[in-house]
Amino acid sequence: MSDAALWTALADPHRRAIVALLLERPRSVGEIVEACGLSQPSTSKHLKVLREAGLVRVRQDAQRRVHSLDPAPIAALDAWLAPYRALWNKSLDTLGRRLDETPDAPGPPHRRTDLP
Image 1 (cartoon, rainbow, N blue to C red):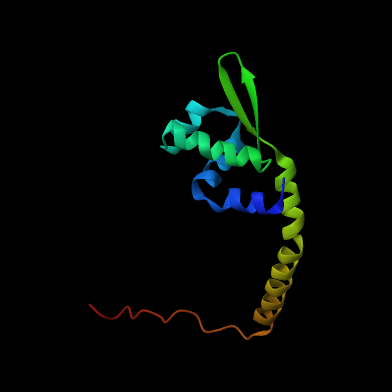
Image 2: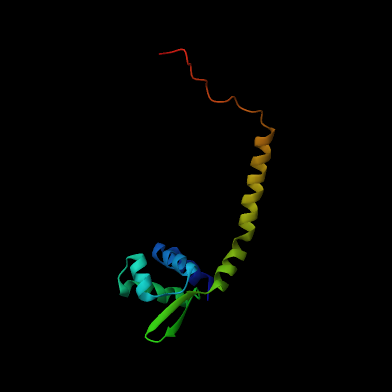
């Protein structure tokens, strides 16, 4: 699996939807077709891209091919994103501290109750 293949595979919204489905549980092509509303040939092409990127595994179960998510590439992606997540957390922590130091803004304006 190359990083480029992983990013390419996840760039497509249909493939991300398939990955989300497989996160729940392994599924046959027919189940994926039904859940995604795609044609069988289109779904098979998307699954091929996901398999080639290493995101999806397939096993034969009698007459069905059952696809499941391979967590290893997702873990690699998570590790790659970790420094960016830390950067965001640091920025949000700084914002939180700044807001904590800011005097409380006045509450919402009061509604007059003496009007008809």
